[in-house]
Image (tube, rainbow, N blue to C red):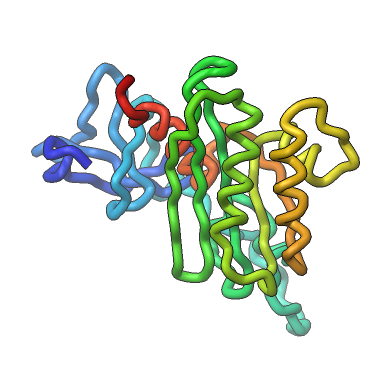
Length: 233
């Protein structure tokens, strides 16, 4: 975080149904600059987003994770134990972290195709969290997307826990979950496929990019930030 933003004040707002912290001025009004406002999903994070002022709503407009309509009174039925795929927590935008499941959000970015490329990885397990933002040199967007998944798998020390990888790359998920034969990047794809075989319970979940899913937006930010921070030529 730069020195200019260290003393910035924030207040709770809603952005695309998610609770966020929005920057305010000394009077408590939104600090608008060129029509946009600085926001954070977590005050402890060291990166920020700018969103249009009109897209911010009062805090009570946020949608609670897993919120459902109140059921009619009836005898309670036994509830199934939570797993990675339980209906209550299946939505990728659900912020609840499950104790028995490792959640991974990956993204790749390329400035040009090919061009300077970066990867972003967000790993979540219980209260544990790790972020990876790495410049990978000149590459295509597809290589960046695959590399993000490869790096994420290499970070995992245990293979006995269920793993769910969230990605907005149809290309990557298609290659790694279907019997597609890669026309390019064969070695990279085979490396990932071999790595996947180490895990007892691993699956991919396709998410829609830039749709307000907090964790996916963070992975995107980490990938694009890596390009901006690339070594000077």
